[in-house]
Length: 140
Image 1 (spheres, one colour):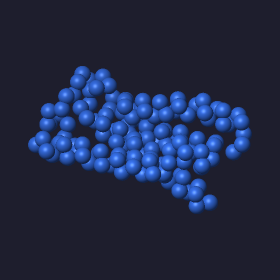
Image 2: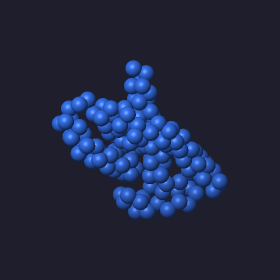
Image 3: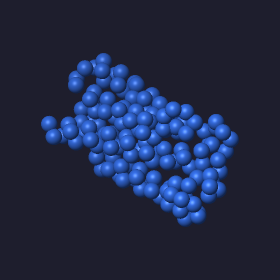
């Protein structure tokens, strides 16, 4: 798209959308949201960028190889966090049961490693959305 207004607004608003997506991911254990919804917001911000600037510019910002690493890294991170619970004597994804610091209820640092799990899910969801959208556009 060659519309200057759309490109300018996109350039201004995408960083705020991404910050909001990160906020949703990090606060998912104490408020509505979490990894899936925050990842969807992050993925949608890059889709907006792709629609405004084109696939070539979007691939320069976030190459397919990087999104592939994020997809794999997100799920590997999730599984490794689950295995930590097993190795510490609990079940898969055990948290408080195996002695993780839980913090004070309502604080950002209050869910043990649940924020780390939601970050892994957010990374996976965002990179999957971006990869799928770019793949669909490349086929046209």
